[in-house]
Amino acid sequence: MTGSLTGRGGGWYRFRDTWVLPASPKAVFDAVVDLAAYPLWWRDVRSVSRVDEDTAELVCRSRLPYALTVRMHRDRQDEREGRLRVLLSGDLEGTLAGALVAVGNGTRLEITQEVEARKPLLRKLDRVARPVFRINHALMMRRGQHGLQGYLGR
Image (cartoon, rainbow, N blue to C red):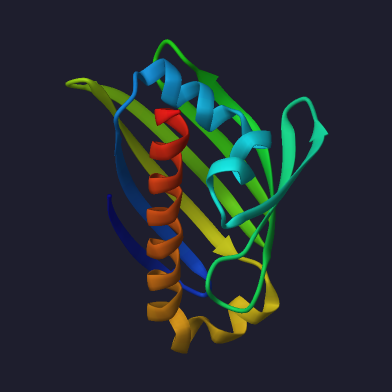
């Protein structure tokens, strides 16, 4: 996994992560679009509630003492091209996009998130806690990658 974060200040963040997974692009694609199964493999995703055919609400909590509630609305889902994108609203607003590429016997999943923190606590602490938020995000993404590897290996 690799990850980076840049910010425009004022609660804006851009995260980039790359996961290399030991499964076919189809298996990875099927797993990442099945939001209801996230709590089975990603311990930071505490719950998922279906809102409608294209929208789900996730409650996430990592190491820091707060939860984030985020609605994910499907914007693009193209298995053939290995591309997906969701619109985020709630405690984080913006986009999350994924691109899948076959590599050797596995798949590289490139994840880009461009978000604005809307949760008042995050906005208030942004200036001083940005490095802590970056570390928290990196740890959460690492646990997600390891969880998905195990889930795909079953």
